[in-house]
Image (cartoon, rainbow, N blue to C red; front, side, top):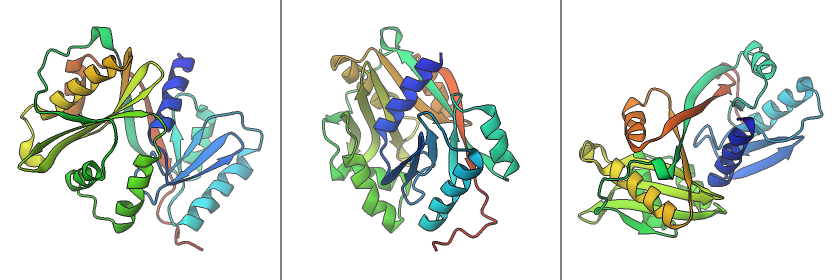
Length: 256
């Protein structure tokens, strides 16, 4: 099981590069101006040799210099002792996330997806549409996030639905080994409950199969029951859960 989790964790890192990254004794420090927890946190990916009493303060100093709290991703691959150390330092849990997986030969993909358009690249128009759907107005994010999408090293399948020349729904498939990862599923609030999210997911999964994918994975924040019900209807099942330990904002995180 751990080997399977490690594979998905590695593919997740490939799928969503950060604006800046630093390798540090088996850890990777990711920084993206606090765009998302995933792209602005520390992940453990290799063998660690230095003591935690040295490594954790070092990471805190790096993120303080960059102007954000330190965040550590806690997956089933991370020891409970490490999580306990962070808890004792006052770190709190945020963004509990369920990873769901699917064998594509068992997927329920009967729904049509005639509204969905596809692109093998990620056009700036799609990114601008995603910003609009997510309400992203931070000027720094609008500058750096397009470069993060362009930095994805794997083959991508970009999906969208438009109406009257405007993008009203998005999705992104990222091919890696025998998997397709499903990302960026968003639908404009005025167009929800029309089946567009299901159309995009169905289209991405079928396109992934055409490109040789045999399995799929996605990540959904716990509590997003509408999304979980959709993914379960497609055949996805929960595989494991991860969360983030976040340094609390009672401290001063202004850049030095």
